[in-house]
Length: 193
Image 1 (spheres, rainbow, N blue to C red):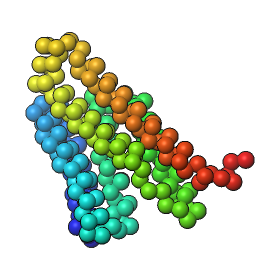
Image 2 (cartoon, rainbow, N blue to C red):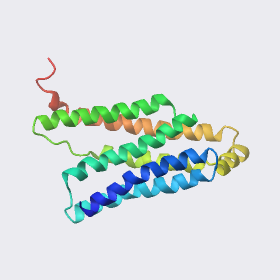
Image 3 (spheres, one colour):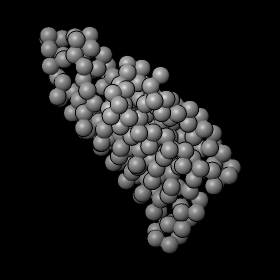
Image 4 (cartoon, helix red, strand yellow):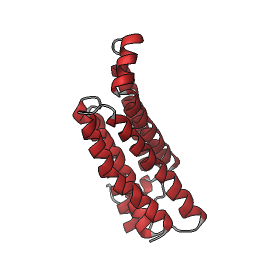
């Protein structure tokens, strides 16, 4: 196992830690900030493993499988917890999931035709903005900041803030998904009659 893959594996191992901290945050509000720390560390491993894999030529088939899977599961876990808490709508999570399944399906069809669809810039931007947005939601939805902002700025500040983050995540997700299909529409040539 390469160093890059080991770092990716750390992200996988941090997932249950993140979820446990999120569940504990309902009883112990400070645990939300511990969750944020775990999420940030896990997100940073995404940058580190990619740089190491490219710099030291440690790209492997297992790494190419595990890296995007670890990213998606981490992000979806955070969104699912926010859904459970009522601050991330289920329809927005469904848009994210549909995009992931659709792009994965597109890649599988392309591979069947001997073609590899590399990660697009918009896909990387979607991942970065989604992770950043979820970090902001973790930070500001903590008891201290949520009460402070709702009391001193606007009674509905956190509701508006959460909707803005959800809107950004949905917009970049839709844009990225559409771009993948537009740029790779030739994968479906002779498929649609």
